[in-house]
Amino acid sequence: MDSLLITNGTVVTLGAAGRVLHRHDVLCEGGRIARIAPHGAVAAGEARVIDAAGKLVLPGFINAHTHFYSAFARGLGKAAPSASFREVLEHLWWRLDRALDLEDCRLSALVTAIDAVRHGTTTLVDHHASPHALRGSLDALAAAVGQAGIRACLCYEVSDRDGEAIAREGIAENAAFAARCQSERDPLLAAAFGLHAAFTLSDATLERAVAAAREHGVGFHVHVAEAASDEEHSMREHGERVVERLHRLGVLGPASIAAHCVHIDGHEAALLAETGTAVVHNPQSNMNNAVGVANVPGMLAAGVLVGLGTDAMTTDMLEELRAALFVRHLAAGDPSCGFSETVSLLVSGNARIAERFWPEEGLGELAEGHAADVVLVDYDPPTPLDEATLFGHLVFGVSQATVDTTIAGGRVLMTGKRLELDLDEAELMARARARSAALWERF
Ligand SMILES: [Zn+2]
Image: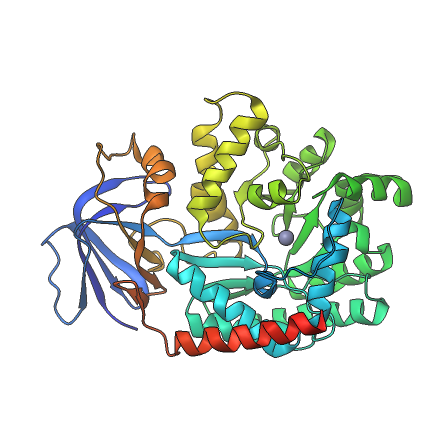
């Protein structure tokens, strides 16, 4: 692990301290932040020096809900037009995931992970599907994220939509990966137990999944009430709402993530708060799929921990943050509402979600002793930058700036906009294009 000295930058700690420290240095040793001090106060010694003059030094961004496997959908024009969210799944995503093989999974993850490095996103919470290349798929993703050097929490989305045998295989895949994480204790990897969504899962499958997850001590990562049809299906088939059903079956809890929650009601929000289940808001995806706008203020008021994800629309968390703010304003018809609250989804919500998977790392905050997940962004502010103005700079300025350097766990993954990874990026992209063209033929 490199010893690094990041010099003379504007250090934006985020997190509990929330400081903006002009002309400061950050010393990283053994994968952790050893010192944050005024420029010149720390001797470089043997450390590699990275000049951060004219740059902000931020904690690596966290994406709390995404799908590596969707990378090969870009430009795929063969899906029939969809009139509903169910048709979006049937016409595009379920056809795509059935066509994936293990090498497609690995390459999808690798190109997405490299994109994340380029956008300063060092931690991703992924939700994977490849029902005809299921066994070993999480190991394939883990190999890719390991090569890119980022942190990832992986799971396989168990579903009954492809039959009981594949549902059982999905349970076994989650269990095998959780066991691997427990035995290897790789600080860059974590496991959750994936579930697709209530409307493709029987009670029997959910009971099996809950038993397996308990055995391995992991929480769930599941899509919840993304479209109104999920709630309608639950009422029709089970006589209860989605969150009530997941609660009855033991899916909720302080290690679990419910993505979306666009159509939950007040009682469901109260159940999520009471059980400590985190919700991840994905505004760009929700707009793109025309499923509605999640009641984030209502969930926060109910005491729910809410974070921000991209649902694979981007790896750029500041772009997603802007979308979250703009849709909030539009939905409320109020251009002044929810500014700090929305920024907090990314800045503190995602840090608290990441803490569930990496309790020792202090992700989302630059502080001594925390993991050295650090990003340098080219940004010379044209207006005063301090603790009071920081969020305005993040949304309206830093979001438009270029990431120069990305470091995860003390390893330099990119600096001067050049990747420092053991791979040939042009060759990788050519291979991904060839594999995706072949997949589109099978689609
Ligand atoms: Zn999703």
